[in-house]
Image 1 (cartoon, rainbow over the protein chains, first blue to last red):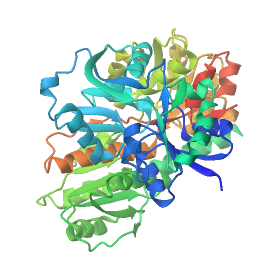
Image 2: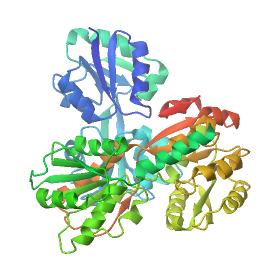
Image 3: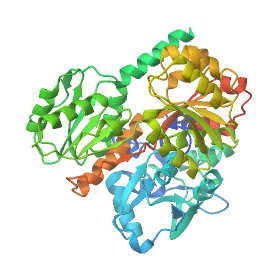
Image 4: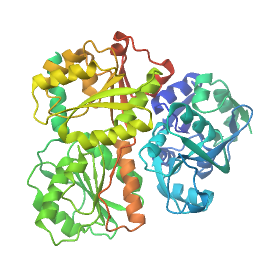
Length: 213
Length: 330
């Protein structure tokens, strides 16, 4: 039976299309891409995967997996900066309590609230979206005071939107997409897989190269 | 062929949002819990998907009882559910449960109403006017969402966009114009009377299409998009219009119809997740009395592009953007 790779990493394209991209370069691995954390989590419980491609924080929360074995890189670095982005004015960091913060749903409702409490030191409300393309709508429709996005995404949104988007630096860096295997002996197989991903697929995952950890 | 498609579309619109109801139970109506959420939803795949998303998202934290309303006149059942379940919050999905709940409140003016959330109903702000302690998420996709997506697809400027609307939609168009302005898009609206006539629509649409607009946004209005008006006015009028025609019903992009180039419709599951966020916040903060009848805009959409029609009108599409679509007619 082919090794099972579960991917939970929201991008701008639909899961089935991402599945096709990855499978093209990793024919010996059965790849399943999830759009929602809940589905990923549920399926991981019912039919545990042999490897996970996701945010390192999601990997760390998954049973059978602890730390990533393969790390994605972009321009030679393995992490990216995260910011709070708002419209017209920067975020008042001293006044975050009770504010609505928009984010891609990485771990479900409760865990996202806890994550932001730990990260921002304030009890905020979290407006979650499952597709990356929806997050800017939170600002357009004033459904969030700010959105939590990577610096790369911020630069992209500044190009595509005519709203005056202002970034507030958080001094938070998160790992780029990572891969973890359940059985260490199989990490070379997965490394061969991601190493052969084409530029387009890598770009969708926000990286340009991969390294064994 | 085109007439058949138009009929299907209009029927589809009516079936999705129209009336008709009986009821069915999917859980034990006698269950009681201080954190029970009662979902009253209309029958149909889309409504079921929205309900499922809410339960998927909040099922670990709260208990749900879902009732499917299928025919009119089920007010007594709804009253029984509310009295026996004593829900902490009520979710109303679809026009029909909202109408029935309005009747329930009218018939029980002294009852205490738990907070409620209305979803998947057309022009929900008009529907919930008489309901106390309620908020909702609009089902109509704001113009700015569709237009920004079209701007990304074509890489072309989107500065002026035309829309024909009836008088009763004036406030909604005003709101949309404000959102569009944030993205540097001017919504050029032409208002027509609520009472429709082929001549009037034909005249105003022709006038609108002759203005220097970058796209036409066709608003969801069953009466304006009747098969008669589609056949006699809309389709022939846009024939020579070589800019994108953006619609809110997938069927209107059918090639045989030769009409819509891009349809943007609600993502029903994502709508449920958005609703779950609202519900979660109400219950977390124990807001048993909602102070205002707030209507939120929907965040997530599904997009279908008729590439064949785009090519026919010589509108280029950025190849890399095609993968962001949910459907493509080639």
